[in-house]
Length: 298
Image (tube, rainbow, N blue to C red; front, top):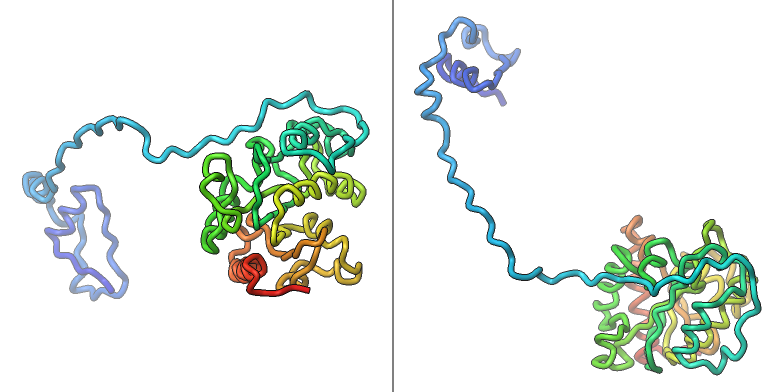
């Protein structure tokens, strides 16, 4: 579609600094050259300008609206440089003792050069029907001292709310029943200075803490979110099945330490692969059926 302008219109646009090119398909009889037309008086151009209302300064807000809480990890200890024995008595620890044991743990090489381990432990024993286990912490999680933070954490929180569950925290935990509480943790608590994949021995070492977390939270369902979480939580599954890719293991119910396990995609993956969100939603619905008892598992 072409816009044919007369000589006066083209001259006025030229005066305003707008150059108009003549389309090739306009008949020669309609082609109007701007250099042969005298520009109109500036008064006519000024008349086209729209009045601009003065912008009033914004009033300073009396207080911020819905400020986002700032997550901060505990003051880090000096980064470990050597290995020590795993703490004894983990199987009998309460939350404060477990937190201290994790904070000082140097039982495997994943601790070397870490800033701080990541464990969002309750202050007292609180049953949570849902336990979500993610892969080793990334830099943002280590910095916050919390699992599943920033955009990936927001996505996970939204997905949990959609099935009537909320992340357990100290502020709202007392108002939640066990059926609507989800305890979030990592399969490994440390992020090493040089990022690498953990070995099976390192996963096994840190599993002592995870087994105690399971006993303290008494979950009705565990959700494995990620490759290494799946590797540990399916360690009691026949190896020919456990070696299958995540896409082949989801949609089924497995077991670890006597608790049903559902495998699904981690939220960070879903941010990059939105086409799999529907599958992750189906996995959460499966987990809800297990947690509520509407799906009986062997």
